[in-house]
Image (cartoon, rainbow, N blue to C red; front, side, top):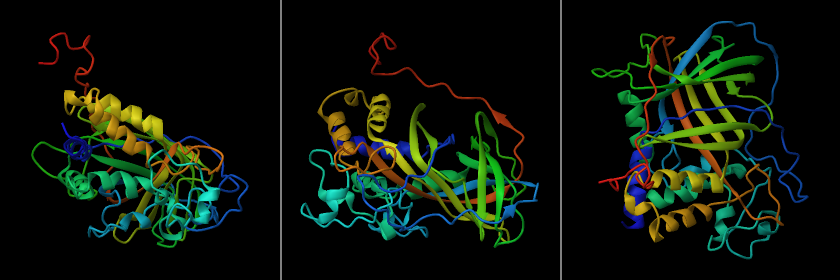
Length: 362
């Protein structure tokens, strides 16, 4: 199987992925590493205001996901990735070629990677997942965000955010908000969700992940201060691909008038080798040709070449890049409080494991 065909299969199957988020604690870094002074760039609003007095729990279900090949309106744009995410490393890096001065303050890129892997997006936005990884899929799966969004709208899956502390003020500014993230299963066998409070979206018992220390500033919600750790779990062909996103940020603009979340963002850094190992674990489910050999090694190499920073979100010119920055956009609509639990699905046997497939996977 050729590299393009393999990526096509992986891109299409990832289009019906589910996301689970686990938030841990962390701290902001003073600068981008390597002794370079920090630059502001695109960052979340500061924590301000008094503790919220609102106690109502509001539940929102994602109805769109944007990976970076198109803008938030769905228009295909090769530069759309520049607007997804935040300035994670504290630097605004401009790189046009191998002699660009800014290369002296960032980590060493992987062998074969272009110097422009270090080129930032708008206002220093870091998002090589959108810039480089999606580029691999473009000739074969040119609209992955559209595929994922269609699956959400059809009710194949969703992510639900249960948030406590929101009120009806579009410019709300408070601290002390909290919430829970749930993974929604298939909405129904015979009807699509309405994305209104009439929806009772079934959810998985596990994970149910708490968010604490959140705040909202002029209507913009942020999951907390400091570099949280977030686990992103992609369910690909029945196999769970878990990736930890370091220095993670979850934000959105609350619009109480339309009962929606707008301009949502999940941003952070993925450990490159964890991503590579995760892809290796699921690749054989698309074709046994991907259990080993030059094709799957080519995929791994392309992933490594997308590394643009250290896995903790910092930069150090004396170290090799081992992290891939990522920025994902989303929107959500308010739905009813979920009451139905769906049973977990079991992964099929690994086709690359001869012990699990005595018949060779025939």
